[in-house]
Image 1 (cartoon, one colour):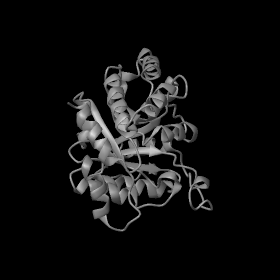
Image 2 (cartoon, rainbow, N blue to C red):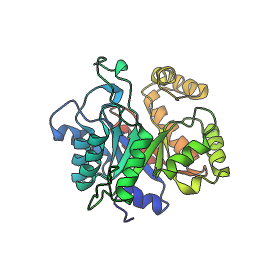
Image 3 (tube, rainbow, N blue to C red):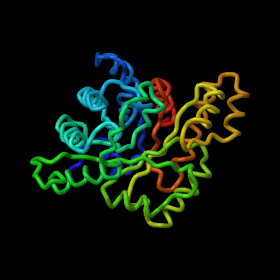
Image 4 (cartoon, rainbow, N blue to C red):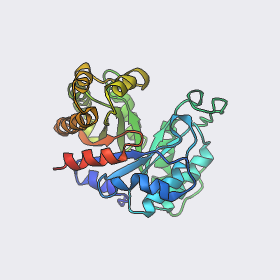
Length: 297
């Protein structure tokens, strides 16, 4: 398949990639979105556009991803099955590719009970793996699940999420996702190189690493307090005690957090099967840009 995204091309060229993340604004103005994300332009290889994160409404992730693509930033469109039925999702996949958005990340989505409109009804017409499988059918077989032809078909690079900190990986599950069309995995935050090394070794022993691309989640803390909050509130996040103690003892906790991220990236880079890092953090585009630049020196 012809390469359609910068991210896909770099991974094929075996370049260690840096992806980042932005949350579309609570604003009907593309300039606000662009102002937020511009620090990442030319720095990150691709930028995830979150889809109503925390089950709170924001500018449409599809619209925001298109704006990024039109301004020289390779977007990764997050699509949750929480909010759309299969027809809407299939329409979005075609519309996204038509306007230069070819990377997608298939997700379940956060529970609306934890959002600011808890009465919201969840759709979940299909699950996230079925979404990935459907996207794969649409690009490879050039048809909808109904059998109707798509001409031309969307050029998609399909991603899924993974959580390395929840014990040993399930090679059978990951291989099933790969066989159904998943090209890359972006993971939840990982702050323990030893744990990650053990996780990737299991996958390597199963012959999985040469079949896919793992981009490992990471991100800066605002403070030791925020690191503790992540430990207690985010699924699959485990910040080691030594990192929290290091932050608590630092004169400038934000600066120390940047140093920790850069050190971890250097560690992760040497672990077999790690193809890049995915840097996350709400409204942290500027500091993430700085981390990527310093890590590349």
